[in-house]
Image (cartoon, rainbow, N blue to C red; front, side, top):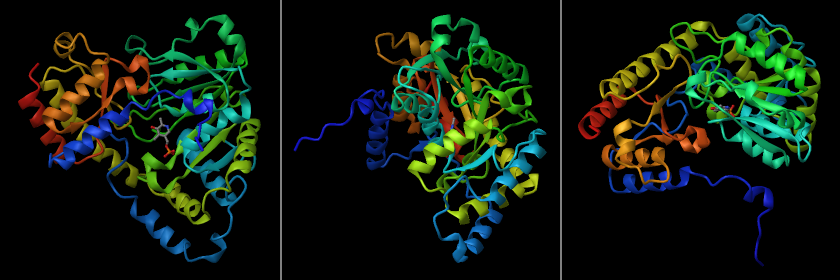
Length: 398
Ligand SMILES: *Cc1c(COP(=O)(O)O)cnc(C)c1O
């Protein structure tokens, strides 16, 4: 029998990283000493008190059954207390907060709850690919909001045509931003709230990097904007903040009807996150700031090594105040000597892999407005970043 995949899967853009992954594997097999600045996944272990809590909880048989529902009450209370302490915003743990199996699934599932076939979803470009995939799975129509450097990588809401606005049901935003590392001021969120109310558009703020900031550039929450709770939901992830990518834990807070809709989709598709993991998550939220401060210091020192190294090459980079990404403009000279290639960002990524053994990500993998940039992460040691800079200095004098 010939197996045919569904049209919705065929509608997803080709996975651009496959070719790079192949090249990476080939280079590894050939014995090249690869420095991987490609993946956004912390190299450091989960914080120790969280692991210790898990060790305790895993033996408790009452944690072993189907978790079901919106998460443990204790978890939701810990979430709302943390949120209040960090952002000064109140949420009702019973109706305005829920546990997630990581924020990715919730971002992907949200359109199933609120988007009808033919509804438009406003999506940032460059952006995390799940906004687009979730929209397509719900038979929504993605409308791209370009994130341009001249606008501080914030979408230009005034440029969205009125016929699109009439059909728009949902919009995704994400600050601190992956991949550009841009941060959004509270005034931007205020603008988004007014825009959403005027056009009856639901706002989903992806706050995966809210705790990864440097030099005290602590981001506000979307809900620090007056009236945000009327229009929005926010997704938070334990992955990057506490080095817990493999654990799969996140939470959502927001308008109670948005929480209920998402919970309804999830209730039909999954059975919740392991209670032991939720309890370890409570521990993470209750840790003294010192733990995350130390992590931020580690990343800041790494950032300084990579950014100063790139700058010494004459490359145009913004010194990121948040996230663990460095968004780098493809150097002019490299671009002008490779005029005929289909994607200049993919070309530079290939060049860096073949000549320096450095893995990075082409901006075009995040959407067409990511073209012309590459992304490097600082999820490796200072020592390896120094080595990367050294190799760049030797091989990349264009
Ligand atoms: C990493 C990431 C997430 C997803 O994190 P989870 O591990 O699923 O919680 C969501 N959004 C962005 C922008 C990310 O980079």
